[in-house]
Amino acid sequence: MRLPETDRGRLTLLIALAAAVTVFTATVPLLRDWFDLRVYWGTIDHWAHHGGRVYDYRVPGTPYGFTYPPFAAVAMLPMALVGLHTAIAAALLLNLAALALVLRLLAGRDWKRHGWYGVGLTLCVLALFEPLRDTISFGQVNILLLALVLADAHLLATGRDRRAGIGIGLAAAVKLTPALFIGLLLVTRRWRAAGVATAVAVGATGLAALAAPDASRFYWTTALWDTTRVGHLDYVSNQSLQGVLARLGVDSKAVWAAVVLVVLAVWVWRVRRAGEWRTAFALTGLTACLVSPVTWVHHLIWLIPSFVVLIRSGHVRIASTLYAVMCTSVVWIWFHDASGLDGFLGSNLYVWITLGLLLWLPTGQRRRPARSTSDTPPAPSAAAPAIIAASGQPGPPSPVGAAAATAASTPGPGRGRTRSASSDPTASTRPAAAKPQSSSSRASS
Image 1 (spheres, helix red, strand yellow):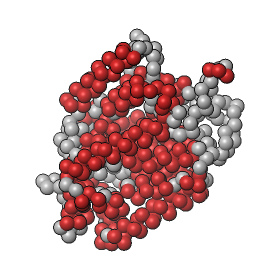
Image 2 (cartoon, rainbow, N blue to C red; image 1 turned 120 degrees about the vertical axis):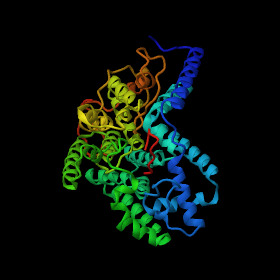
Image 3 (cartoon, rainbow, N blue to C red; image 1 turned 90 degrees about the horizontal axis):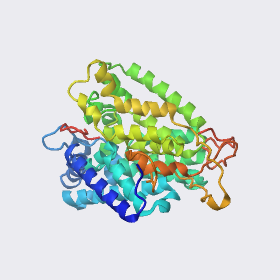
């Protein structure tokens, strides 16, 4: 089966796909009713207008309240000026703008090559991805944080190290998970960028301490260590290693710490083998999801760069299969009972995908056959790779395969070529290697 090659055929296909995606998202997954955004807005309203304390607020009828560092509350203070419905509209627009930036950073120079057709296919594919649709439906901040981190990845990959670190620092001040990217800068000896990121994170945290001293004191001494504030660790949406242990009934912190240390050691080893920044950042996003005590399904938006690396390295079918699995909400089959071998394997399926990507994600790009000068496109952007749609690509209409196959056609650094320090996370010039969430039960995080 071939994809349509005429504009009329492509438009017809896009309309059909958009209709199918709309039906799927409206009937299969449960909509989240902006629950997390209600937590944010209610907390800010309680703090700014009623003299309440940030971490005392609870959504009426639920035990859930604000769980982010105090700087996140300070950054959200503009919500005190608007009503809930205006805040929802603004959050939707911000998420869409951040998604556009993420796509632009991932696509690089491929963005214009595929035009409206490629953009349309890409949006249809992304709309099916459970972590992304949950992020938008909850009113979460994950896309904004991903955009901040990828902006720094772009700066590092294009040799503009002097400006890098601000995005990572801000993301780490809003939420602790992105702090591992500061560790990436340290592992790869990008001392200046690591210093900038650390200074921004500390500075933002200090600003929050001045604006909300009581909240800061409570968070860093009490709330941070109380994982029950965000929900039960064995909840099926917790797709982290801690979630796996909790569902097995293992509550030993020592066991969890040992597992985390092993994963971090693997991460350091794999990052040092990474031949480019896009791969190093993808591996770090995977590791952050695994080692975090709580990784709700919508946090797995950090896996998107890994699918892009798979596509660019020529593993389109593997990327398509794994991506399709993460569009199904399959882990919720074991919502009520995760016992037995099927429960162990099925309820933790997203963890196994994340762990598998950490272990086997290609650390370089396969060399493409040489082309004549007239047929060779411009050198690929050093930004993170794209999930970008194919135009006239033969093959079965697999969601990611059809929408992203031609991203792999962009030539990259090949075996035997040297790489500048700006594009290699280890700053070497060695040759490149070959190439609550879907349930009625709610939780804010």
